[in-house]
Image 1 (cartoon, helix red, strand yellow):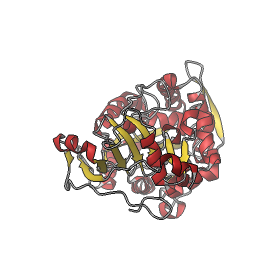
Image 2 (cartoon, helix red, strand yellow):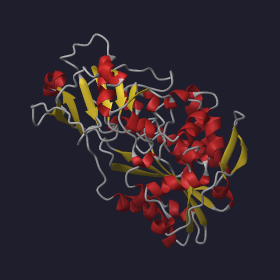
Image 3 (cartoon, helix red, strand yellow):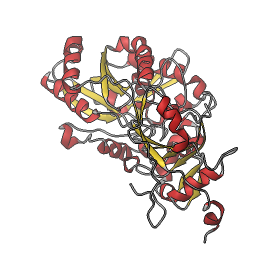
Length: 425
C-alpha cells in the first residue's frame, strides 16, 4: 500500500446526484446568415476595394462557430473581389512560435484546406510607433506589409485576470493578439491593474495607424452558443465595446452553489478558458487585482483537454490534481504564456495524486471543519459546460429550493472507478 493510500484511502467519497442548471438562452440559430446580414447592412464592405489584400485575425480561444464565421467572412470578401488571408493573432500562445500558433488554429478547424485561403503565421512584428502615453506599439508584420486592410474578429467577454473598460474583445485582439509575444509582454509588463488602460491606448493607436476595415465582435450565451454578432467600424470599436462587454457579463454561466467544500473539475484547457478554468466561474483568480470569492475550500483537476496540447495554464488555481493531468503537461506550451504575462501562479503545480480517486480523497481530507458524512461536493466537466453538473447529497436541499436548478432524480449514486482509480463515465 502506497503512502498516499495510507493517508487518504479512508476518506469516503460521497454519492452524487445529477442536477441541471438553467440559464438565459438567447441564441443565433444561423450565425452565418446573421454575419452576412450585419456586414451588408453596415455598408463597411465598401471600405474594402476590389483587389484588396485583406488580413483576418484568428485567435486562440475555443469560440463557438469560429470556423463557420471565419469561412463566411472569407466568402463575403472573396465575392466582393478582395483577396483575404488568415493570420494568427494570439500574443504568445501556441508556444510563442509561428508553427505552434498555426497548430492551434488547426485544432479549431481553421485550415487552408477548409477556408480556401492562405494562413500566414509568423511571430515577426513591426513597430508602429508609440501611444500618447509613450507605450511602444507592435503589430504582426504580415498583417501590415502583406495586406491593404485588416479585419479584427474576436469574442467579447469578461477577462479572467483583470477588470476594466476593455477586457477580452476586439481591443485586446488589436493590442495583444496582433502584437504577438512582444505586444503581449508590453501590455502585461506593468501588471493586471493597468491592463485595460494599456489595451485601450495601444488599440487606439493601431486603429489610427493601420487600415482596420471593421471588427466583428462575437457574444456567447451560457451554453457556449453564438447569441450576437456586432459588426463595428474601426472608429466605433473603442466606444461600443464596453457596452457589449457588460452584455456578455450578464450572459455568463455560473455554478449556483456559493458555499461548498470541494469542486471536482474533469478537465481544463486553453480551449476552455485562457486560464484553463474560468476564474469567474470558480471564484479564484491568479492575481490580487480581483478579490477571490472563497466559495470553495478545495479545487481538484482530473485531466487536460486534448485541444490544449499540453498547455496547463490555470492548473495553479487547483489545490489537487491527478497524475493523469500532471503527466499531460507540456511545459514548453505552458510556460511561455505565464512568463509573458508575469502571472506565474497560473502555472504552479498543485499536489499531485496517483489517481482520480486519490485526488478527490485528498481534497476532502484537507478541508477544514468538515463533517465527513456531509461533504458538500460539486463535480463539473469544465467551466464551459455547466448545464449538467452533479452534487453530493449534502447539497440536495439547497438544490431543490433553487429556482434555476432541476433535480430530475434525487437518488444519489456512487462514483465508479476503474482498476487504476480513475473515474468511469
